[in-house]
Amino acid sequence: MSDAIPLKLFNSLTRQLEPFQPVHPGVPGEPDKPAEARVYTCGPTVYNYPHIGNMRAYVFADVLGRTLSFKGYKLTHVINITDVGHLTDDADAGEDKMEKVAAEKAQSIWDIARHYTEAYWADIKALNIRQPAQWTIATDYIDEMIQFAKAIADKHCYELDSGLYFDVSTVADYGRLARAQTEDGANEIMGRIDEVEGKRNAADFAIWRKTPPGEKRQMEWDSPWGRGAPGWHLECSVMSGAVLGFPFDIHTGGIDHREIHHPNEIAQNQAHCCTNGLDVASNSGANVWMHNNFLIERSGKMSKSSGEFLRLQLLIDKGYHPLAYRLMCLQAHYRSELEFSWEGLQAALVRLKRMVMAVTQLKARHAELVSASIAPSQASVEGEKWTLKQVQGDEFEMFVDLVINFEASVSDDLNTPIAVTLLEDVLAKKKVTPEKKLEVLAAMDAVLGLNLLTLERQDLRIRPKAATITEAEIDARLAERKEARAAKDFARSDALRDELAAAGVEVMDGDSLGWEWKLG
Image 1 (cartoon, rainbow, N blue to C red):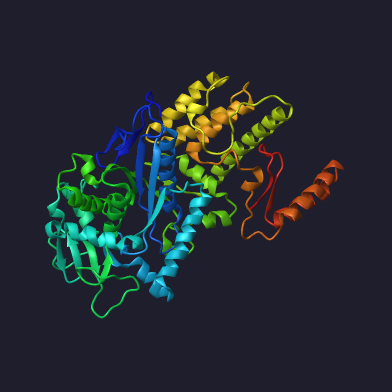
Image 2: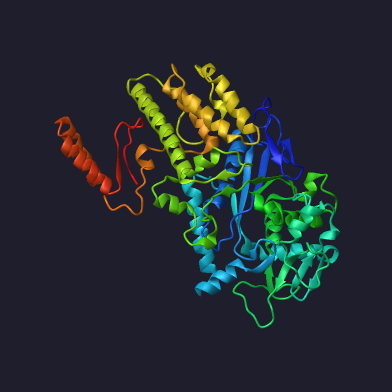
């Protein structure tokens, strides 16, 4: 990692930009004992398909992990899967999301969880998000949740007919993450929390929910407080602590988690570890809490209750490569709101096409040089193993400023908009061998995750689901049209263009990218 350019991250708990200091710093001079970065990301509740706003959180967490790897840290990243305990209102109200969907569809809750988990994993793969070190499944940790709750129950919890509740007055600085100590902030949050008769404080939340008398859930377990299921907040405290240990380095999630879910996690972590205040960040269970901002979509189709909501597969069905959406996310800072529009997505796709074409030309030139027996270096330009330490040697001085600025941008709280521009500056660099340029690009793309060294032009031409004409038919019409134009039979050429247009094919004469056509 670079000592000259320290990694700085915005900590939602302190509302400050802070230098990253790993809990496990490793042993200097011993490569087999590197500094480690331990990261926990709040994963999905698998009752439905994730929408693209959900997926922005995982693109952000992936860039964070890639940046930590790029800076030389050994990364241990955990993402959870919630298959029990999350209620229909994030603020601890309503029915269990999984039980509700299972009842509506008259299906096994386990089958529903499996189906939507696999759909989520497919989106993870499509967006080129790296696999974490471990996926933790909530229902695999029920025993650990019960033991965690038992350990804190006497000092921090009380029992009601509906379950075991956490008394938030028993820990210091409750709500600091959400800035709920002010009256206005507290009132806003309290307005979202379910009223339960007998609660000591409005903000108290369920650790364990008893199954109501006369009812039976598909997912329920015996506990000291009766048969039932864990609360959503308990799950993340238990899984993060069990796998990463307290305190770990970084906890990530969407900004919606900052108001209730994560403050409740923190309260549980304090109860388990100590009851001291949050002036010491490690008392929260993690040294740094990071949150990505919302993806805004003006038509209202982001909500899963809207029917055909905006999920990644819908983008693909309309002919957009999923990495165009990843690039769209990278074009905005993770802490800024990002407005989704089809025009914006199209612009990101065009930008990605330009990058892919430039890299494809570089690889072709590199192959020509190798075939001409101009000896390449020992370095491979494929894959994601590159760090800037490996981009050295002849011609490196041509890239020094760009490389330093790239590292500075990602080290400055993951400033990906600047980083993407710097990658394009490398692509535009003249009078350097393609091999060296590919090496630098590989190092940069290892952070951005656009898969530029393996994507091909044809990969970006995705057939819209509604299209009826085949690519073979399009190519045949275009070949015929090319012959007509060569023979100056412009009437025939125009007729073929109109025929293609009627089939939803836009012929792109004069397109600077040379893409020739696209399906509308």
